[in-house]
Length: 115
Image (cartoon, rainbow, N blue to C red; front, side, top):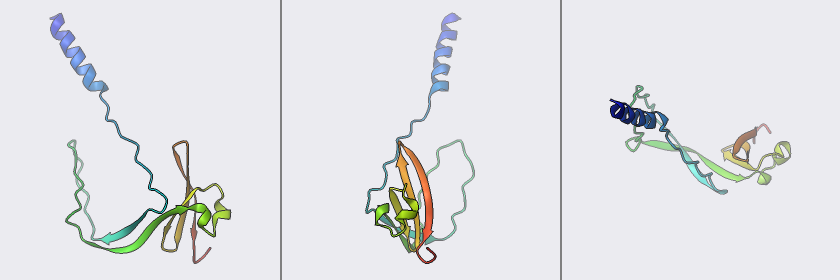
């Protein structure tokens, strides 16, 4: 009986302590650009205990904008966001951000049209 209990204990304790491990994503390099695609509505899938697959290969869409990652100092609005290291530009919208010791912080947003 002790042997059965010991086997069950060690088997279950290992299962209870098992945790998924996520790798830290790599940041987009400076100069990175990507099309932003507008497409049809995608209905959400119902919740499930099973892993879900996100396969959008069937989805067609149109490029509606271009996202570009640049050094914040290249922007004319850099003085207003001096703590920022990078700026994401999408059309006339700019988002200034920094990464300090693994902490992602949005410093602010600007609009080229309104300043």
